Length: 331
Length: 222
Ligand SMILES: Nc1ncnc2c1ncn2[C@@H]1O[C@H](COP(=O)(O)OP(=O)(O)O)[C@@H](O)[C@H]1O
Image (cartoon, rainbow over all chains, first blue to last red; front, side):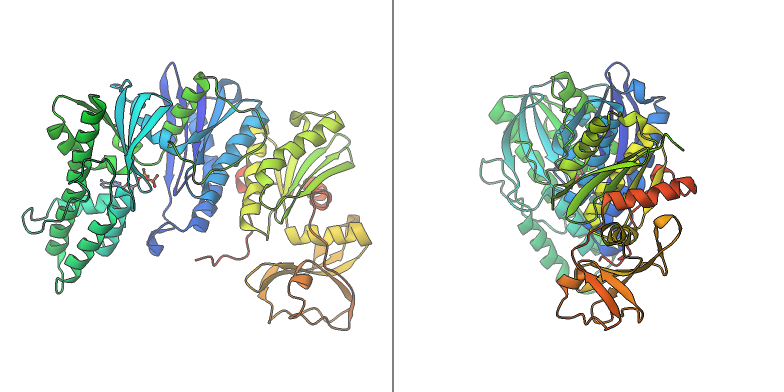
């Protein structure tokens, strides 16, 4: 069975083909650049760019997978959560192509896509496991007894971890306002100079909070007179460490509480090397599963996979109505 | 020429309409559906095909109202025609929304000379000036443009004026005496798009599906 996946929930346009027999056949991503000068994703610009790029990616994904209409069994698209105008483009395209080809379509939850991204790897996790989803819009721990059966263990009460990374990148005026820039400069940081609090780690609950940390970083940085690159690196290191130690600690707690022994890491912040390293060190006997780096951030491979999985459970949509769900909750 | 079927979409305003031209017999479905275009548009298309006893694969080309208009509405139309064009391997025809509005004025009232003014929100108006040309189609005298309500200048000749900007900005627009009549309740429709599209189809003014990109006119959005 082959599924075409389409993703346009934020600032990546993407298309991919997943085959249950042969795995991922192709995947194409275009990361928008129109937002860089605005210091954050501008919803209207995002939607405009999706209209220009998405169809070309769909064509490329199909031709690289040597698939035509007859080979595709269903079309999966991200219906939410995300930016309404951006979601609309991929959803309407997915549904319309399904209509024209007389195939079922599947509305996929973007977060479920992230959560299932490690399933595309050779060493795929088998439920039950705990999933840590850390992206630009979400930070949550989920108990996954089976695929499709999710229980929320904890989530952020304010900013998402990725959002905090983005804001710090902006504060430090790094070339691009993204977490990977913070991670890069942090490598050069003095590990002893600053120490930021690990928010909400004193209690045993599994919720997160990153907005206070972000404010502390702001004050600390503003108190430095004429900051140079080294100051930025030192701050970046201490910030990254505070976030990551918090994430690691909560993951350990979640595994203890659920008595599970496997952790799945998903979402953009999952690309952070230091996070991966610390999880490997701290979770010793437990196994940790990651998607490959490029499938941590938004992509359509995970959407095609999630679509296939939902289809295999008999879930499909033959209606002609499209509804985007900007606030669709996974749990 | 006899076997042409064109499916046309108008999603640029609060009204969603779809029209089918089946060998020159035009049928249309429309609904005042503010934010429900995505929910109704494909169903309309299928219903028109069913009523005509056609299948989607019988369609020779798709056309749409490509702007200016509601940004989100235009992207519903663009997503639909790009996808249909691609999936059915048929060409797309882009039609100006204001031309469709002028054409609708002609269809409804036989008007052959019209200044169109569509509300662009934020105290601005999308404008165009159209006159009846060959084949009973309204043709642009100038390029469509965007102007603030204060700077609106209505042509100084015997013409009609049509579009919802007239009622939206009633207090701010003064209609000169040369205006023969005004119609503030005319909206662009898929049947008007269809009439223009058919002519463009024969003139080979079609495009690849991927080129079905909205003409927003308003490009300063940040
Ligand atoms: N190496 C990294 N370290 C920390 N954060 C990162 C890294 N790479 C990406 N991110 C963060 O991941 C987020 C983007 O992830 P993504 O899953 O695409 O999120 P969303 O779908 O919510 O936009 C951004 O907030 C970005 O800062």
